[in-house]
Image (cartoon, rainbow, N blue to C red):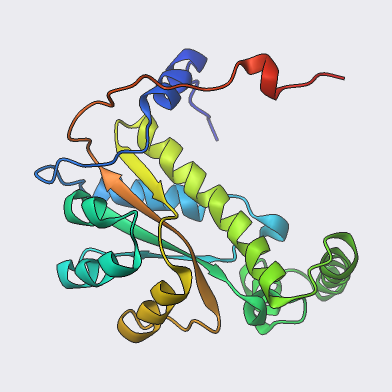
Length: 224
């Protein structure tokens, strides 16, 4: 496989270009090819043990978007103007606990591991949960899944920026109320999935007023 040689300065330009877009140009819609490209970068994202503890709902129905507004205080303008609006779901304990059927499915059917590898991998995963990361509660397991889901979110936003598409990650929502809505109106099994993030994609209505501001590079990096 030949990997394209993207210039480092072009990648940094994309990171400087990207900002949390507060309002999108509602007249500009992403093509199916563009949004599928962004979603494929989520599909190809890495995750702990490669178990992909996520699911993504693309909300294009206007009525469903309206229903989200009261439970997502950080999203109303994005819901009205974004070309595409994505809900990032993270798997809860029944899906990702070391002895869950989904985990066995991932090892046997998806990754097609031989029996002896499944046995070894299962042992490592159980020790990781019980000893290394102390994932001994439903909340801890969901938080762990959410961290994996954020890797996919970062890759989607980066891929978007590299192709001139704007985005906005959103945590401004009431999780309990939002999940109740997902269960009632979106057919989400909230015993298995929780809402980790919302994200909007499209084209900005205007450039940001202020330049990107970050701490100095030497403040965030230590060499030993």
